[in-house]
Length: 156
Picture 1 (cartoon, rainbow, N blue to C red):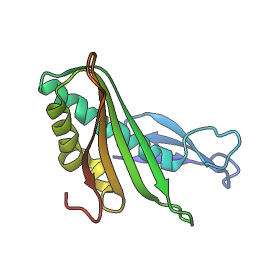
Picture 2 (picture 1 turned 90 degrees about the vertical axis):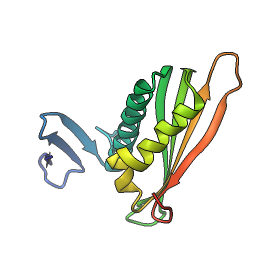
Picture 3 (picture 1 turned 45 degrees about the horizontal axis):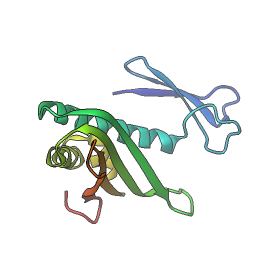
Picture 4 (picture 1 turned 135 degrees about the horizontal axis):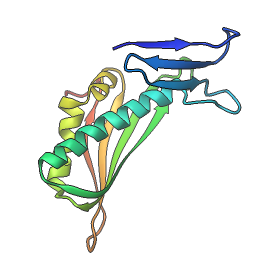
């Protein structure tokens, strides 16, 4: 895996164009830029987490013959007050609608959080991650559940 970040002239710019070994590009910008030209570095980490765990859960649900009508992953993070303002707590909420068994959803999220998602595994070494879901099914009350908490103070 390879990424090259190029900083346009002047080299002191707070914006970079990143190109991956697979040929995709992305603009990354400072959170302080007005207007920003791209995602901040911390946002890119959260995008990686949301998409990694979401792809795992979607694949596991498909193997379990579950067919969500809608699915999105919302990630919210807290940061330290002082530099380097690292992420200190992350809440990952899987928002699902349609005909899905709650036990199957719970297990899919648990497997992603504890076994399959490498981004979650890396972040769990230094940040507390709270994995939850919100399930909306026709004719039933919405269901919310905490699935697992991972992090440096929790066993995986």
